[in-house]
Image (cartoon, rainbow over all chains, first blue to last red; front, top):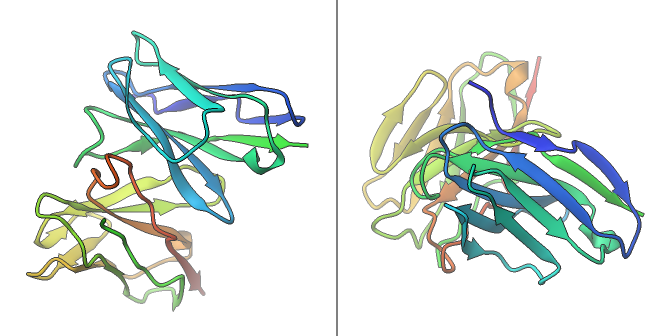
Length: 114
Length: 111
C-alpha cells in the first residue's frame, strides 16, 4: 500500500513569506503528526492531529499551525518565515493516536528560507 | 519527565554485532520503548518496540532489564547499509503528550 506522501519535497522561500506543506497519510490511518528536524535541534515534535482535532502541540510559536481534513490529509502552515525555520519537516501517520503504535514517516519537505 | 540518553556516535565493521544502549531513568509504568532508524534526508523508520525483557524481529533485538531504566538495541552482523542514526523513544505522553526524540546515535559501519 502507498506510504506517507509529503508535498512539496523541496521549496525555497524568503523571510516574511508563508508556506503550506501537505501530508497524505497511509490509507486508513487517522493520526498525523508533524516534526521539524534541524542539525542543531534534532527532531522536534510540532503537533498531532487525530480525527480533525489537534491533540497535542510542541513548543513552537503560534506562527506554526496545522489542520487535518475529514479524509485525514493534513497541512501545516508557517507564517512570517524566519531564517531559523529552514529545516526538514516530517509528517508521520499512525493507525490510532500516537501511543504505543508504529509511526510511518514520509520523506519530508525540505524548506530553505533565504 | 522521561528523557533518553544515547551515545552520540558509534563505529563498527561489517559483520559485527552492534549494541546501542539507551538510558531512560524516569520511564513511566505504561511507557513502551521504541527504536527508529533514519537515513540522511529520509524520515525515520520503525525498527522495534518493547515493554520488558526481550523482543526480537527480523532485523533487530531489543533487551530491556527488569528495572526498565535502560534498553539495548542489538543489530546482528551489520552491513554498510546499516549506517544511519538510531533513535530511542520512551513512551509518548511526556510533557503533556508530546513525542520526544533524543539526539540519536550516529552509527558508522566500515568495510
